Image (cartoon, rainbow over all chains, first blue to last red; front, side, top):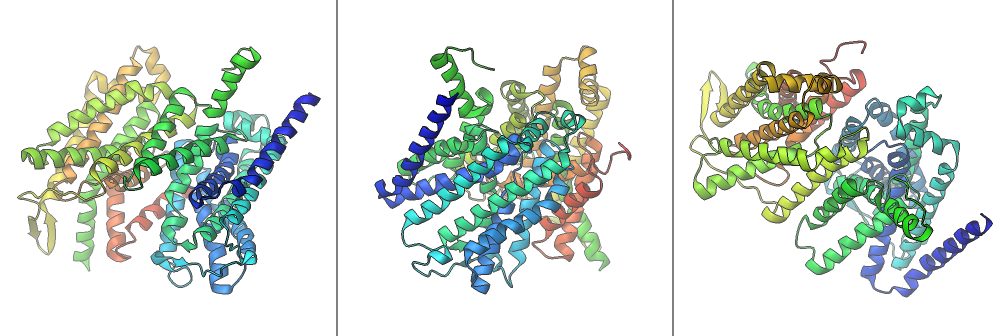
Length: 328
Length: 289
C-alpha cells in the first residue's frame, strides 16, 4: 500500500504543477476564460456534490446560495467599500444562515418533492431581490466599479490571477470533500443517501447531519457567487439566481460521477469543453444548443451509466488493467 | 370593490381550469408510476405548437385541433414510458428525477432551436369576444377552455371509477405491489397513465391557444402552478389536484389584483412554502399520518 500512496502523491504533484503552469502556457484569453469556467463550475459541483452526491439530497436550488454570496459581497463593496475578500466570507456566512430555514422547510419532503421545494426557494429569493430597489438595485442590477489592478479588492488586470483564485477555491472544496469522505460524517451521509430510514434506525441523526452538510454546501456555493460577480463585474437577480447555475451544479456531478471526489471536476471538463467546442463551431447564434447537448449527455449517462464517467472508467480499468471482475 | 373581487375570482377560476389539466396529469403519473414528471410543462408547450401549426398551415380552429394534440401526445406518452421511464423505475430517486428533468431541458431547448423564442399567436373569431354580466367581464375563449377542461377532468374521473382499466390504475396507485399480485399488468397500466397524463397536457396546450401564445417557455408557467397544486392537494390525489389548481388560480389572480401585477408568482410560492411548513403531506391529507 506504501507504493500506491506514493503514486497518489506523485500524481497530485504532477497535477499541481500542470494546473499552476497552465495559464503561463495558454495565452489566448478565450482559452483562459474556458479554464476559469471549468474551475468555477467544478467548484460549484463539488459544493453541490457534498449534499446532493453523498447524501442524495437532490437540490436544484443552489442558485439561492450562489446569489446570496454574490449579493452580500457586492452590497458590502459597492455601498460600504468593504473588500470582496471579506464580503466573500460574509456571503458564505449569510448563505449558511439562510440554509437553516430553507433546509427546515425543504427537508420535510423527500425525493422529487424536495427537489421542487429547492427550486421554489431559489425562485423566491430571485423575486425578492427583483423587488429590493433601495440597496440591491432591483431588476437592473449594477456594475462593479473597475479599479484597475486592485488585488485587495479582488480585481486583477491579468485573467490568470482570477484563474489562481478559483483554482484555490476548488482545491479548498476538494480538500473539504476529501476530509468529509474519510470521516464519520462521510459514512453517515452515504448511509442517508442509501436509505434514510435505515440510517436513522441504526442511530444516525439524519436531520442534524443533513442540516450540517447543507450549511457547508451553501457556504462553498456562496464563495463561488462572489468570485463570479467579481469576475464579470456585474450583478443582477437573473444572473445571480440563475436556474442554470442550479442545473449545472447538479449536472456536472451526475455526469462525472455522483458522490465521488473527482466526479464534479471530470463532469465539468466534459460539459464545458463540449460547450466551448459547440460555440466555436456554430457561434453563439443558435440559442438552446448548449442545454440541448447537456440534456442528451445527461440522459445517456442516466440510462447507461448511472455511476457517471468515473464509474465507467473504473469498470474499464478493472476489466482490462487489473483483470478483476468489475463491480456492478 | 365587490365587483373587482368577483372579477378576480372569475379570472382565477378560468385559468385554474388549465392548471387543473396540467396538475391532474402530474398527480396521475405520480400516483400510478410513482415518479414526478418534470417535463409535464413541455408537453403543454408541444400542445400549443401542434395547435399553432394546424391553425396556420391548415386553418384548423385550435379547439378542434384538440382531437389531434390529445391522441398524438397520448402516443408520445406511451412511447416515453416504454422506452425511457420503464428503464429507471426502482428504489433510486436520482435517475427518475434527472431523466424527466433532462427530458424537460431537451424539449425546451430543442424548441428554442427549432422555433426561436418568438411568441406565436392564433387569432380566432372568438378570441376577443366576451360576455358582460352585470359589471363582470367573461372572455369567451377562456370560458370555453375552462368548460372543456372541467369536462375532460370529469371524463377522467368516470374512466378511473367505472372501467376495468381505470380501476386497475387506481388500484395500482393505492398499493402497487398488491395490485400486481392481483394480476394487473404494470407495464400496460403505467403506459396508459403516462399517455393519459400527456394527453391532458396536450389538451391544455390546445385550449390555451385562442387566448395565449405558443413559445418555448410556455410550459414552465403552467408546470410551476401544477407542482404547487399537486403538493397542496396531496400527491397522487386527482380530486385534490383539481381543487387545489382552482384555488391556485384564484390565489394568483387575487395577488395580481390586490398586491401588484408582478406578485402573482410570489403569492403562489408563498402558498407552497406555507403548505410545506404546516401541512407537508398536502391539504387533502388526513391528520396524524
